[in-house]
Image 1 (spheres, rainbow, N blue to C red):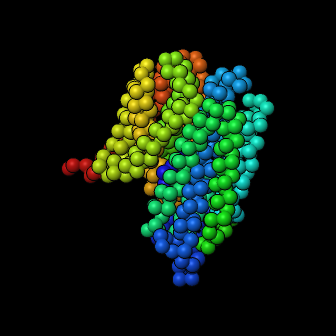
Image 2 (image 1 turned 60 degrees about the vertical axis):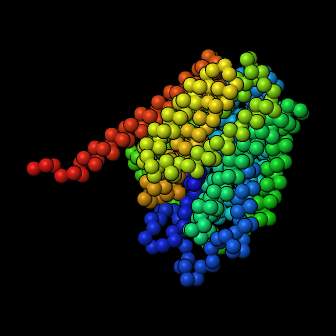
Image 3 (image 1 turned 120 degrees about the horizontal axis):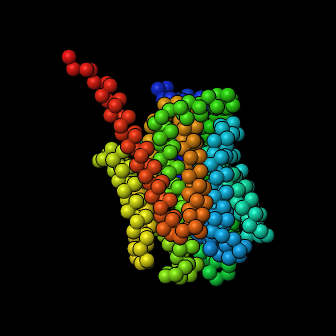
Length: 436
C-alpha cells in the first residue's frame, strides 16, 4: 500500500492550499471543532480504529496468496488459474478506487469505510465455502471492489480530522495496519492450512477481519470536519484527463505499476517454488516467508532519507538496483540465497513505491485526490498483472521465467526514470539563458 497517500481527497486547511475540484472547503477555523492530536480525546481511539481497519482490509485482500499451491491442488488448477484468486481482488480494487473516492465526497469518509469493511467481511465469510474455482474468483473480485472504499476514504478522514503536525504519525499507524494485516494474514493462513486445510485458513482470516471491523465500528470517532461535496462527473472526468495528460504523473503511475508487477509476480509464485524440490517446504513455513515484509516497513521509512541524500531519481535507481539484485540472487537453489533475494526485492520495492507514491501528491497542484487515486489504480493493476503473468511464466518456464518477467519490469522502471532524467535536464538547460 502507498505509504502515505492512498488516493483520498484532502480538505483545504488554509486559503493558499490548492483545492480538489470536487471537494468542498472546510468551515472557517474559528468555528471548527478542535482537530485530533496526541493527548486529545479521541486521538487514540481513532488510531486504533484505523489500525484495525488496515489489518482487516489487507488480511482479506491477500488472503489466498500464501495458499495458492493448496488451492491449485484442491481444484486441479494451474498456477495461472489459481493466481486469479489474488489478481481478481487487486484488479477490482484498482477499478473501483476512483469512483468510490468520489462517492466518499458525498456520503462521508466514515460511512464509506464502514460500508467497505462490512461488505468485504461478509464476502470473506462466504469465500471458504466457494464450490469451484470460478466461484472463488468471483467472490474475491467482489471483495476487492468492496475494499476499494477503504483506501479511498481513510487518508481523507485523517487529513480532515487530525491536526497537520500529527498527521504523519496518524498515517504511519494506518500504514502499519496495512502491512501487518497483509503479513499476518499470509502467515496465519499458511499455518492453519497446514493443519486443517485452506478453507479453514480463509475462514480464520474472515473471523479476524470481522473482529477488526467490530473494533473499528465502536472506536472510530464521529467525523466533525467533513463537509459533503457534490462531485460532478464532468468535472471529475476533466480532472482525471488533466492528470493523464501530465507527463510526470504518467511516469510516476508507470513506475508504481511496474514495481508492483515485480512484487506481485514474486510473491504470487514463490509458494509454488518453495513447495517443490529442492526445498519441499511445508505450507506453514511458506506462509512464514512473508515475515520478510517487515523489511519493507523499514525501507519505506528510510525512503525520505534516501531522497534527501540522493534525490528522487537517485533513490529510484538505488531501489531498482536492489530489486534486480534480489531477483538474480533468488535464482540459486539455496534457501538462504532465496531468502536474501526476497529481502532485497522487498526492500527495493517498498523504497521505490514510497518514492513514487509520495511524488504524486507533490506533483499534482489540483485534484490531488484524483491524482493519488489514479496512482493506486495503476499500482493495483500492476499487482493484478504481475500475479497472473508471473504464474503463467512459472508454468511455462519455472522460476527462471518468473525472474525474467521481473527483470523486464525492472528494466521498464529504469527506462522511465532515465527518460525523466533526460527531460529534467533539457528543461533546466532551456531555463538557462543562451550565452552571448
